[in-house]
Length: 357
Ligand SMILES: NC(=O)c1ccc[n+]([C@@H]2O[C@H](COP(=O)([O-])OP(=O)(O)OC[C@H]3O[C@@H](n4cnc5c(N)ncnc54)[C@H](OP(=O)(O)O)[C@@H]3O)[C@@H](O)[C@H]2O)c1
Image (tube, rainbow, N blue to C red; front, side, top):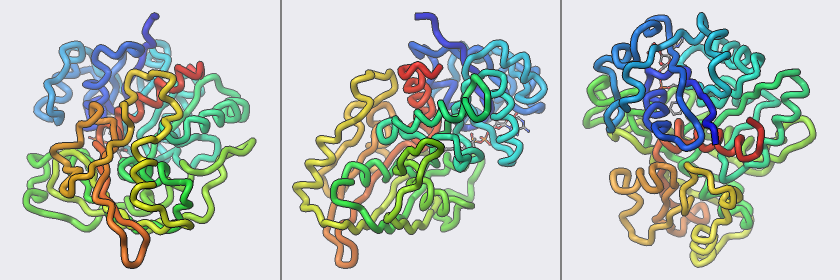
């Protein structure tokens, strides 16, 4: 199969660097364009990134000498070279929406990490193992916008850490969730070197994160109508988001109330036998299993478990009965892999398998 030529918008940033790393030797996609701001444009990737390489693996050789293009000024050139762009820009939301629209208008598939289009009515927000059917909204998007391209988004990085567990238990009717996230510094695009104040520290505020953690699951778990996604009714989520002194990996503590309280045996059965709706597609980035259940009382641990399934699996454990809610548990995912670049790559693989690219 001839590989699909792809570009990375925001290639020099934390998430962009993760894309560059994960797409090395990808069987279906070939990175032909790296793009960023005018500050980086015209330089080689290695020069543009300079001392600011923030990934725990070395910069892939293929990327080092590639020229960095300007996302906006070189848009026409980039659109001729690629069929798909992964968007990892950090800009104002209306600027990002304008850029994503322009690329889609030129026939390009846009798979975005950004929040700018997450609530756009005809844009699906996908976790491939949960709502792959929402990609059907793309037909409506294409018809309405009259474009051959498309825009699809992935949710906020905190959401992947706990919603897969709640979805696995959906037959018991989850009603109320009290969620406390413990989020890594890489989630802010930073390291301990660029953010030394985070060493030996926890900060109980992440701008706009609690609203995203509470609201985005309602679209992901919602149902597809013939013009949009109807958000899920009857599920309330209350979130507190805390930045902690961890490099990568968002852990979440959840207390959950159900319409019908499951037993521990039923919970374990649902988690271990989760029916992954995309398993039959054998997508290259799809982890197996999707969910890891730990019976040990001190797991999951960030350092031990964030890389399960090449950073694409979700892990959980510590299920205990709760005196106020029904059950409480802890879960974990890798924020820049499953929660960002890896999740976007898996979404692109799903689009290709569904012949939407
Ligand atoms: N970090 C995570 O775990 C995570 C998870 C999920 C989603 N996200 C989202 O992903 C996006 C990127 O996050 P990040 O942590 O990678 O940010 P980052 O490290 O600050 O990188 C931002 C990127 O945007 C580019 N950029 C900034 N201003 C630009 C402009 N005017 N024109 C063109 N390019 C511009 C930068 O290029 P230069 O280097 O040239 O300035 C850089 O490549 C954010 O929206 C973030 O919310 C992050």
